[in-house]
Amino acid sequence: MASYLVVAHQTLERRELFQQLTAIAERDPEASFELLVPATDPSHLLVWQDGSAAEIASRKVEIAPHLFHDAGLRLARSAVGDSFSLQVIEDELNAYPGVYALVIISTLPAHLSRWLGASTGDEVEQRLPVPVIHVIAGDDYDGLLEGLVDPET
Picture (cartoon, rainbow, N blue to C red):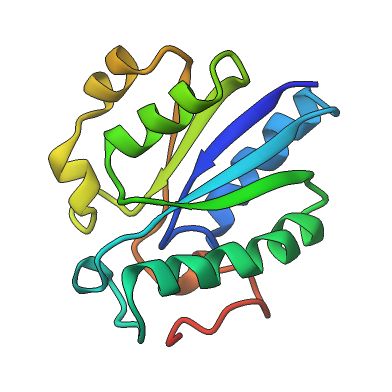
């Protein structure tokens, strides 16, 4: 059974991400996903949310099992990471060497994503020892999974 590292915060409830994860699970029925939610500074979020970076990320971790279950996907573990940077992904891969077959990074589109402004896709692929899939969410709320998340929260 292969493990796949999913890195997402603001895009965790996005349909685009779950379409990609479902496609992976269809190719690998034994797929197990592990979610890393970076503790993004609240001032960097697209939609204002109450709480500290860690509290906001923890709320994402709390809803993740429901999102994955509803999509028919196996979520083995979810955790809050330090911040949305390439370093937090490298730290996870170093903590669990050889565990992940693939890293799936889900971001907002380039014109909305601070992370994409700081790192390029080529840089990510060069620095990480496993293949990377980059999922880019749409720039509106049409891609939100229905009934699970209020875009205002």
